[in-house]
Length: 231
Image (cartoon, rainbow, N blue to C red; front, side):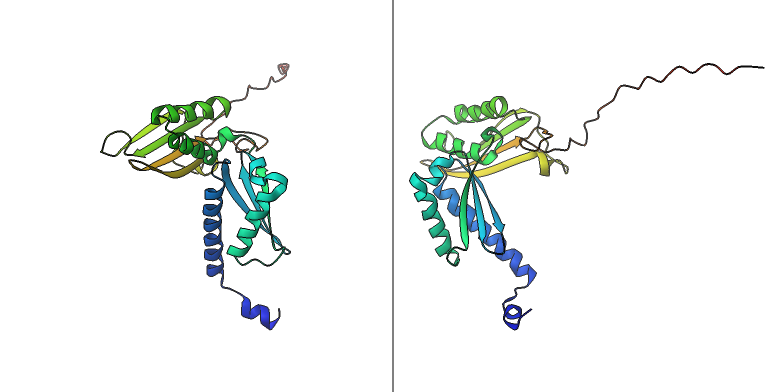
C-alpha cells in the first residue's frame, strides 16, 4: 500500500457513517424528484471502477425521460452534489415487479390521492384492497395520523389479513414505508405495512417459510413383514 493511500484511508466508523449519510441524502433527493413516478427505493453498488445507483420505480419510462434526458440530468445532479469524478457514477432505472407488494410505491400512491382531495377512508381502503387482491399479500395495514377532520389530531388504522409484529420473521416478511403530507389543515403522517407471501423463487417474498408454520407429512407405507417362525 502506498503512502498516499495510507494517508487517504478513513477509519471504518467514519466510513459507515459517511455511507449512511450519502444513502439518506440520495434517497431524499430521489424521493422528492421522482415521487410522482412511483419511486420505490434505491440501491447503491460500489465497484472498483465506478459507483452504480439503481433506482427502483413503478414507471421507469418517466424516470428515464425522452431519449434518456431525465436520467442524464439526475446523473449530473448526483455527480455535482456528491463530488464524483467524470464517468465515476452511473444511474439505472429498474422496474418494480409487483407494485402491490412494495410499501414505498403504495405509500406514495396514498400520498398523491390525499393531495388530490380524495377522502382519507376511501383512499386508505383502496390501498388495502389493491395490496390484498392485486398484490397477493398475506396482510396489509395503513395508518393515517394528524388532523383528519376536526381540529383535534387523531390516528386511523385500516387493516386486513395477517400481520406479524415481533420476531426475526418481521425482518424478512414485513415491508413498511412512512411519508409526511403537508395538507391545508396541517401535516399528516402516512404509514403502509405489507406482510409479504412466501415465494420459493424469491421474487415476490422470502424463500424460507415462517418459523411457526409446521408441515406434517403423510407417513410412509412400510412393507408388511412375515411373522418370525416359532420352533
